[in-house]
Structures are given as C-alpha cells and as structure tokens.
Image (cartoon, rainbow, N blue to C red; front, side, top):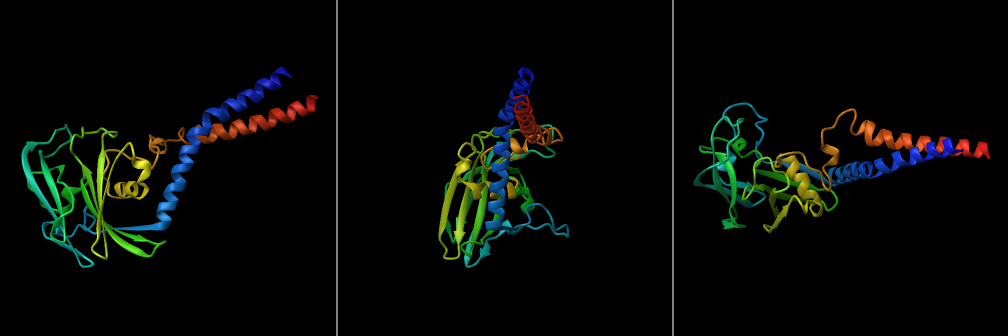
Length: 246
C-alpha cells in the first residue's frame, strides 16, 4: 500500500511541476493560431532584401503612397555614435526617426541605431517596417508603421524594449499604439507585427517567452509535455493498483 501511495504521489508531483509551463506553451500556440487566422500580414517595403536583383530597394527615400495616404519616413543624425559590439561590421549612429502621414507628424520622433549613410530599406531592419494588415473578420485593411523605440534601450536587453505602431486606415485616419515589453500581453496584434518585422532583440511571446527559450528535445518535448503525460500515466497505474489491493 505504501509503495502504491508513493507511486501516486510521484505522478502527482510530475503533473504539478509540468502543468504551468505546459499551460503557457499551449496558451502561446492558441494565441498565435488566433492571430494567424484573423489577420494576413504583407510587407510593403523590402526590409529583408528578399529581392536580390539590383538596385537595392530604397522606397523609404521618398513618400510611400498607400490607398490615398502619403507616408514619409524622415531621419536626422544626432551626432552621437551608437553603442558598439564585436559583431558590428560598420559603426552606427543614433538617429531620430520622424513619421509624417499626409504631411503631418503623427507622433514624437524616436531614436534608432542606423548606418551613417542609409543606402536601402534593409538598413532599417529591426527598427522600422511598413506592414499591410488585412482583417479577415471585419474585412478591412490597414497600414501599420512598426517601430522599435531606441530611447533608453540597452543593447541585448529584452525587458527594456518599447515599440510604437502607427495604424493608418483607408479613410486617412491614424491611431498610435505604444507599449513596452511588460504590457505586451494587451497588444496581441502588436506583438505579431513586431515578430513579423524582426523588431525585437530576441524572440518574445504574446504573454510568455517560455515557449521560445532554447527549444530542444528536452524542452518542451521531454519537459513539460513528457513529464506531464508520464505523471498522468503513473497516477492511473497507481489508482489501478490501489483498487486491486483493496
């Protein structure tokens, strides 16, 4: 009887330590499926150099027209060098990015670490992107200007990251959405736009990053998925043994 009880307690312990991380992983998958089913995203500029034929795309050098809206991305050099790392091929500068929509500044200028001489849209990778959003539920389209805000950000630090997303609709109305890493769970579409645009120093989740931390055979296959299922199996076997011993 004591062995059976120990067996059941072992199963319960495995279930207990596996339940919360497994819940977080499932939660991320559910949210991602929801966003992917509702929204379709399309890049407006060649931010990742997917089209290799020269010359490199530099559409941001002039106003971009989208469904009657004119979008301008203006940069100004602060004269300050951006923090360096051993991986930097060329020195970067801290520059201010100003967004104009239909001739009007829609929000305050933000900092970005960019090459001293910008030669293509890909220079803005991880700092700015223009994405068209199709909402399949409401049958509407929007243009999103996705920005990572460099002000007070330390290179490689995930927690201090902030973003700004300017939404522009077909009626020439614009709204500004600003949020940080800490409150990203209230901005599900915003997180998807950030990930789509590669505008984060590491992969982040909608509410938890656990599902994206060092995936391997051990995690999440062995733990928490395997340990959770093993725990259930052990508990079932334990109860079967207990009933036979009565």
